Image (cartoon, rainbow, N blue to C red):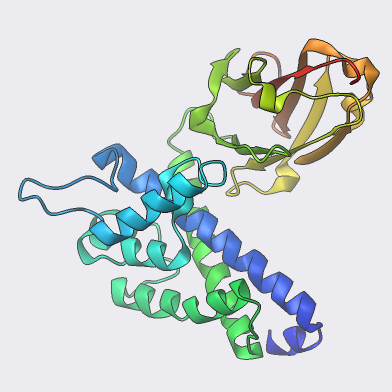
Length: 295
């Protein structure tokens, strides 16, 4: 591993490590929310009968302030959790034994102290990357190895959980647009037989005009290999959108898009010979924007 990392440029090394750290933060946020929300509701404010907070009060306040200051960046409280925060939550003794030991057992078979030791080793290089400071080859190696171990453990855990679901298929978990909006699945309205939708028809700050460019990016459940499904796009307009595939699309808005309700659709289809939805796909997204005439 170290030999391979020594062959890349410093910029490439930093890019690899930042991507790995961001992936780890995503997975740990998901794990925390999946494990704590069903039991405690708003676990950031939950307290037991003795008034003891589940999450340290100062951490909860920091998360609350981050979300208040940047609500589009952090649509949920958990989205405002940084790596250090996630490690503190997961490695809290009673929470680890009750909620996090099993999902992380492949990465940390010796339990909480092992998890805390290895995860804390990532905090310094994570901060160095965030503030444009240098990291060593050894730190880069630790990032890649430790993060891969954690993610693989969580992927296997979620696969095992998926075996007990009626339809074990990938779903769209998050959508980001070029207006800076970020939506998680729980924020969307349901549509059809299990799809999701959102409209921006009465919000002038999200109206479009010819000459604008709309960018949409999806995040699909990362416990599924992207090679096992396809993402295809479409709209009611004859605008070439149906030829676009993948999690990110760029739409140059033209006169032909002008209408009160420009609906954009995305279909997620696995390579299974069966599908969750009666329309022959496994997930479905509709976003509707208003496109005004040329200025």
